[in-house]
Length: 334
Image (cartoon, rainbow, N blue to C red; front, side, top):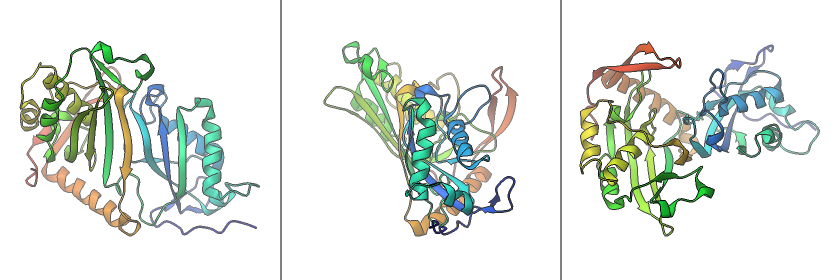
């Protein structure tokens, strides 16, 4: 007996290649990955990103290219415990996922995609998948992204077995001072000093949580929560806090940098290997579409009144460097 077609998604209006059938079944999928194996999330020429693996795996299953939208793009070396994505399938593709197995289409998708990803030896794992609630957008429906960052300060705390998920710092760090510095930049601000701007993208963000604590094992863990993070923002904030914690900079450095609104030689990025995207939080099902529309509208407003950037010259690696065109603070920032 064929599987009943799920409720179609109002945003999945694309047409599958080679077919007149619209891809109206939006899937939401949760996955984790060891970022040390990849050059970040995004698909790039000549290097391997997690997005490429997922999209190629889906193409193997449905025999066409499938575009995957991610909640938060991670840099090279950064890990994810609970990353969220969405993609659109046709009803026929969805119903065909189980083939002859008794599994539901969503569970068959997880099993078959993990089978394809087995070549990565556990570096990428699909946790679960389901037909998305109406209005769901992995990126724009999100309320919060939460990151963690582990630091072992002092050689006596260095452990080779956890080196892929822990930053090693030679000097002892003042955790209380770092925690106070972290609290000084909470709120809605233009984080230009802590971001690598992208073309025509705002750097205004709401940092809801930023803290440092030392655990019973002596390891320092930073926790950061925001509505969204711009490129390099988490690593730049951690890097600034490290400079205060080991005495290279004085108390008040993070707030001063925030006010300066300039990205220069004082902007230091912490090593990516200790950074983990822990989770992405979403509103209740009935509020997903409204949240996505609200996020898009706010980004457009921020880009119109806040931080704009323009393209500069390409670097030798082919990436674009950008410089600020207008550096006005968001009137609603705190």
